[in-house]
Amino acid sequence: MRNRPFVFFALALLGTVAGCDHGRTRPRSADPPASEVWLWQDQVTAAKLVVEPLVAQPVGGLVVTSGRVTFDDLKVAHVMSPVTGRVVRIEAQPGQRVKKGDTLAVIDSPDVGSAFSDVEKAHADFISAEKEWKRQKELFDVHAGSQRDLEAAQGNFSKAKAELQRASKKAQLLRAGGANLGGQSYTLRAPIGGEVIARNVNPGTEVQGQYTGGTVVELFTIGELDTVWVMADVFEMDLGRVKQGTECLVKVVAYPARVFKGVADWVSDALDPATRTAKVRCKLANEDRALKPEMYATAALAVERQRALALPRSAILHLGDQTMAFIDLGRAPDGRLRFERRPVAVNEELGGEYLPVVRGISAGERVVTSGAILLSGML
Image 1 (cartoon, rainbow, N blue to C red):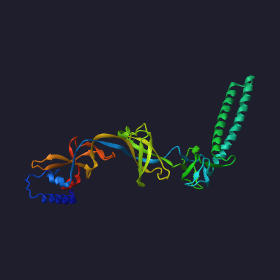
Image 2 (image 1 turned 90 degrees about the horizontal axis):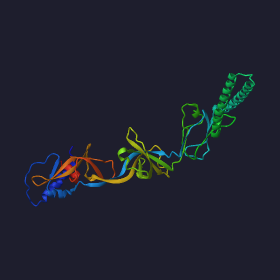
Image 3 (image 1 turned 90 degrees about the vertical axis):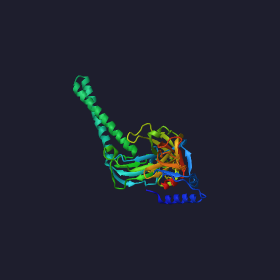
Image 4 (image 1 turned 60 degrees about the vertical axis):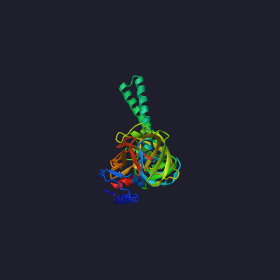
């Protein structure tokens, strides 16, 4: 579709130039092709068109990709209950700072009583099996007992010993975590110091234990947000230019005018087979807690610039889904300058003033770098 405002502006401009031509008469000639604009030299001067040859330019400098804000995994803990039971008291609230070992919640659990009862039962079975094994051994030594009875007693003794060790380890684990010896309550404690980021449990809630094999729900999230990570996805074609220590500039939708600076401290050694991307981890300071985990982010990684045939952004025209540029083809038979609008392909993913040419223009061809939009309005 023709751009009427530009047509009117172009006609007015050409009319002004023609009116100032001091009465000179120009020869009549054929109309230019539909994709070309033919102008006299004084019209080109009045339109202030700038034409430059296509040459190699420094391009790139940034690899721009998408990413996601995450916790520093050494500064976050996802707390779940090791026992099944009912929450009877909540001690920690979202936003509250806790120290390692502070009480988060108290759970009334029959698992605690069962665990310590299992220890007592296993200990009694162990003593009984040990005595029977010793008795059978004495009988066998004096040829009053059979080899079969001795082996059976020894097997029962080994089973009882293993069961006692299992029950003791479980009780020890629960006791270290906060089980009340002799009762049925379990005190859920903070495994690290930090801020309570989230609480997903209320008093009276029935929770499933980690050691019971059921579906376990995360009850608390504790972490520090003074440092966060951005996990960026870098395409295979750019991976060779991204190194450990590369500066990372991050933007998020919540703060469109703000740039967060960080450093890429890890580059994955494996590619995702579906997306052909590798993970790059950027570490960022976050003292004001502006960056929140799970925010989507745009990450720009600073890399070395490279030279390639490139067009300035001012030469690029976007018409619908096509990318165009105007090429100077020299003079027409009547002496006018010919400008052809030609489809081109450029790599617009790279940041910077110049965009590498993929196809459509060859080195040395003269490109309109200023005033291309005016020429487009004349077609």
